[in-house]
Image (cartoon, rainbow, N blue to C red; front, top):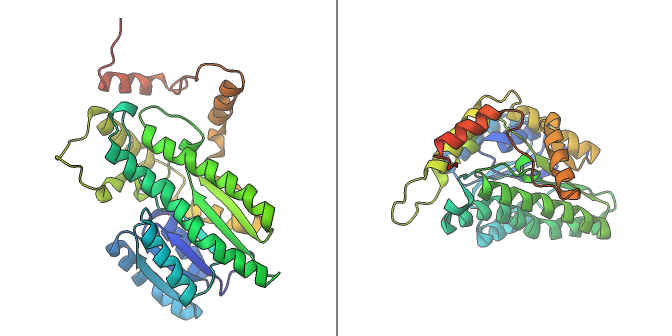
Length: 306
């Protein structure tokens, strides 16, 4: 996928962060863009910004307010795309939310929300768009497409106090690795990548704005507040930008690179985790390099000690 002009891209979570930055690169390259987000105001801002350049390129631009966790909404979106633009060449299953806290304090509502968006949003995108991409590939040996699913470095690690989020992202990594192998069985015309960013300045640190109201008005626990504060600090202090990640995504489209990392230097922690698994060692201390952070978190949570 080197010549992108005139090709169609579907991008979820397109109102901010990686999705919006990929939309900016896509419109520069003359792609026909299908912008998907759960927030109309974010879509309106994106459309206002991108429409003039799309017109100048002679490409199409459309906005769709969709909850990716709802299968019926994603099915309807896929049908609209098929009808109006045909099979997409690039599908970026990117929409995501974050919710932390101690594992036993996450409620069923927390799990349903995070897994619904982070995992099922990806599953729905793959389920409804891949068949039409395969149909296009069967009809034209020159046709090519690519699917990118957004996971996280948390999908390769097991940081404390982030259980719900990490589980959802581990599932996305496993699902995308399986998708890669499954597609290899039937076609070499559709590439697959999994995006594993670390701390990058996006809107995910503020995703609670879209969190459904918990029945009974339950307030966040101390661990959830601590997780939110640490995430916001880490994300907002990140030196790698969302625009940097978008460029990595487009590079992967060209090279068909599967794993996309924002911070390759963090892979040492991934290697240590896999060595723990292979050698049947107890999990390594995640705060070994920064013990002060571990102590801060334990103090904040009122750790029990002998």
